[in-house]
Image (cartoon, rainbow, N blue to C red; front, side, top):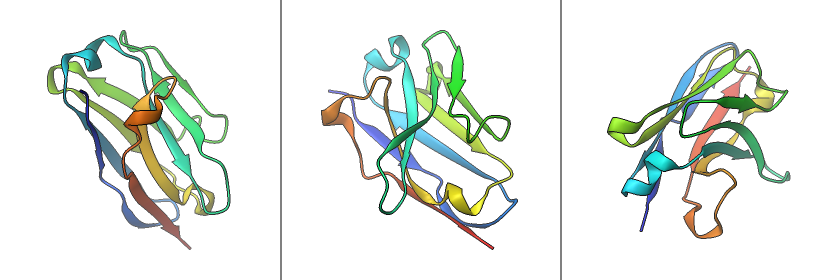
Length: 115
């Protein structure tokens, strides 16, 4: 069974950058579209960015031009480079398949953007 482990979150000032990583076990990763999702306090979880097995990407309007999703199939890892962070980017960030699979939600990684 595939396991997904997020890392790279932290506290950053507005305008700063962070790079999130999601390591996956299992060969199915290379054949699967993956996504980064986030959930802010009091809000529903939302898709931030997604990438197909072939590298095609799409982004939520709120992060277009600031975030970049990428993947390294040799390392079974998907990344989210976050630049020009805003206060409203504060959330717990999760990776999962795209569309997401219920049993694969991990604990996520907290991103906190301060003023």
